[in-house]
Image 1 (spheres, rainbow, N blue to C red):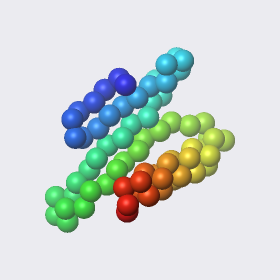
Image 2: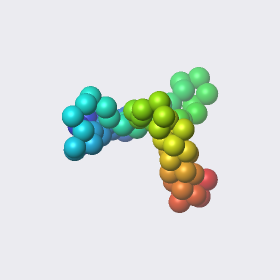
Image 3: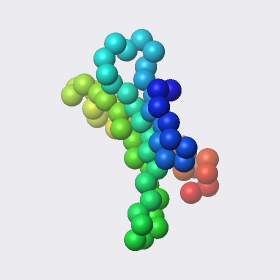
Image 4: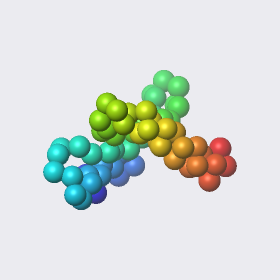
Length: 69
């Protein structure tokens, strides 16, 4: 973990990665509607983008299942 703000965001960097890539989770709340969103930022090579999106979709589906959503 390289950065965090309580109840707002957390950022991680791969230990063996020499580049400035990271992945980050942010919680955003819309002030008008009150809706809450999880925003994920991740870096991937162009040829790996589809795999990365599929991975995060699967992980979020598992999280929602564990939370009973």
